[in-house]
Image (tube, rainbow, N blue to C red; front, side):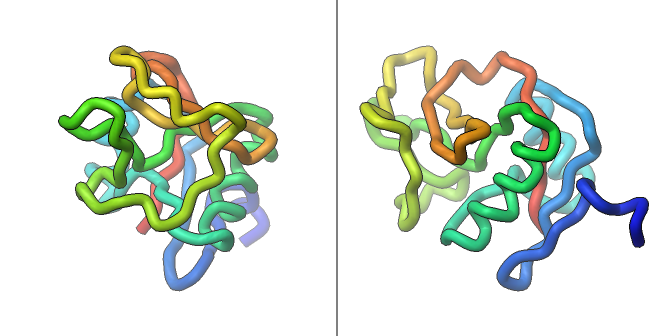
Length: 125
């Protein structure tokens, strides 16, 4: 199991995993679905910490399964439900058209960003 370190971590009955690759949001969404999962989505502090483990381990950012809704200014989970847990950076979310995706930074805070940047692929199952 040592070879799986930094690739898989459990939290709250879910498994969070990454493939050590980076991609834009839409590719991340596709890769997670192909693997039978979803883009990592923190719904509580434990899940947040599981995702943050990868972000810190690889010293990079990752997309979260959170996006601006069809209603401008409203941010929600990809399944359309309201956010029940957040860890926004100061003055975030700042939804401004081209910033419709959400990334987790190495300090654990979340920021709205463009969906075209390459970030670490982290999925949950």
